[in-house]
Image 1 (cartoon, rainbow, N blue to C red):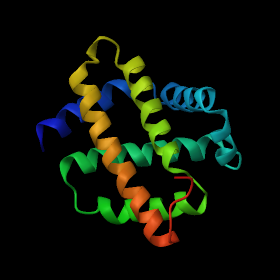
Image 2: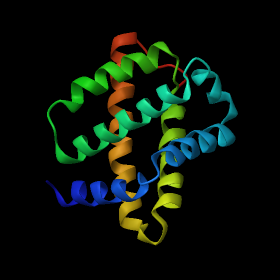
Image 3: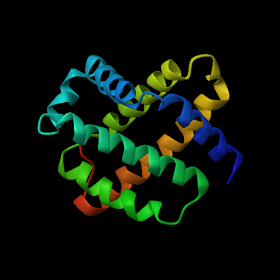
Length: 143
């Protein structure tokens, strides 16, 4: 496991100690900063939102580790996001939201290095999902 992957895994253990609170705060923060995005989640109950967040965090750690299965999963997610009209800028909103909440839940453990590591991995995931959505859908939504 890479040094970055180890650092992110340790941090995830810290921030996920109170997983229900983490999940609640992520979506509270996202919807408070970007109320329009809440419309995309109206059909998703809290349990579905929780599973979506868990999935992206598992994929983020796997990406940091260089796991071979990540690309296929991101292609599927990218297509789903494209079909649901997730715009280019929304990926950045979600990344920024996660960074804010990870910092909040990390407490004194949070540092510039962790922020840079999380941001790099989350932006890689976002880029791959956007490209997959564009390839499958024949264009860019909201770019």
